[in-house]
Length: 238
Image (cartoon, rainbow, N blue to C red; front, side, top):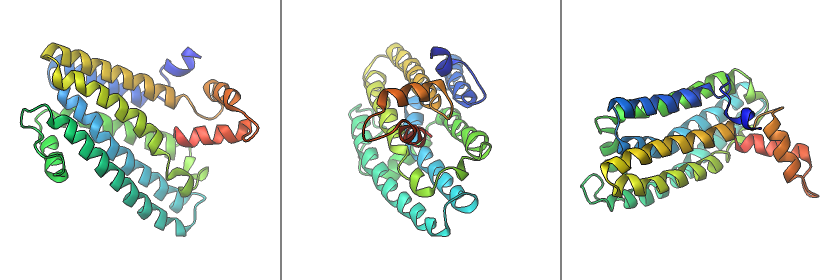
């Protein structure tokens, strides 16, 4: 089971590369702890963009119908609202730091512009984009997953990953923002490590995997068969 999750494979290669690259940036001083934190914070938007692309790909080349275009717009609307609320909460937390980086949590455009203008965010953020782009091309398109799921099935799948991702980011932010410089670097390393473990665990839940079989057997009940649970797990961890 341990090997099924953590052993480097073609399936999880982009996750490993992204994490190693971020650790390397910290080591050579091209990224600070706060830029790593903000890069993961911005990942919420990146996940939404790629989820919309997956829905669109399923409509254009998969099993969804052209009526699914309305679902893409609906997803962008409700996901955008979710990101806005989450951002206000996050900026309120970051603003407590009191160093002038985030002044008003409700000024979303100004705050995101401030983050994107950080000197070292240009090194850290591409690692997150690279991971999702690589997975989208090699896994979703390469393995023709767009033929297996409809846009409707894909629409709500980001929320499980977002919940886990933001929970780790918020916990780490307390150590990075309020800690000393040395504690901030350690917290950034732990943040990257925790995210690596979580992403690898989610990535290991794929078709015909040992992890998927194990979880579906444990979760099987009278209301849901093993095969039904397998499909739901694949969708929510896609």
